[in-house]
Amino acid sequence: MEPPYYAVIFTSVTTNNTEGYVEMATLMVNLAKEQEGFLGVESARNEIGITVSYWKNLESIDKWKNQLDHIEAQEKGRATWYKNYTTRIALVEREYSFQSES
Image 1 (cartoon, rainbow, N blue to C red):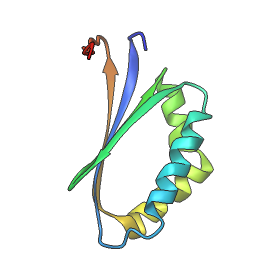
Image 2 (image 1 turned 180 degrees about the horizontal axis):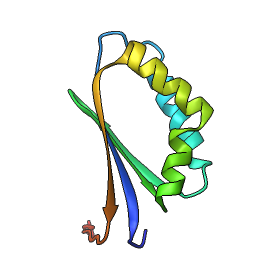
Image 3 (image 1 turned 60 degrees about the vertical axis):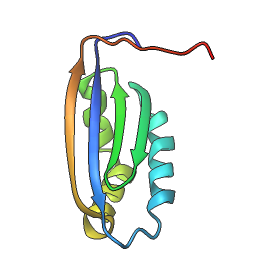
């Protein structure tokens, strides 16, 4: 990805009732990949879950937030799966990385 682009950083703590959570998360990633302006996603979960999705612009992020299946997942998350969560939207102006040869 060539900056500038946007990162949506979603951090969460789940409840003990996670039935159907993994399936919904997988569905949401697959659905996000179909959205205009989607650039990629990275995710990790331990005590805290962190998912960072990357988007071309703020309009694409707004459309994703208001996509009907995504709204349904958000409602289910608030009602069942999450103790708490925070969403942050950041403009990525620069990036650099390292990759080992071995």
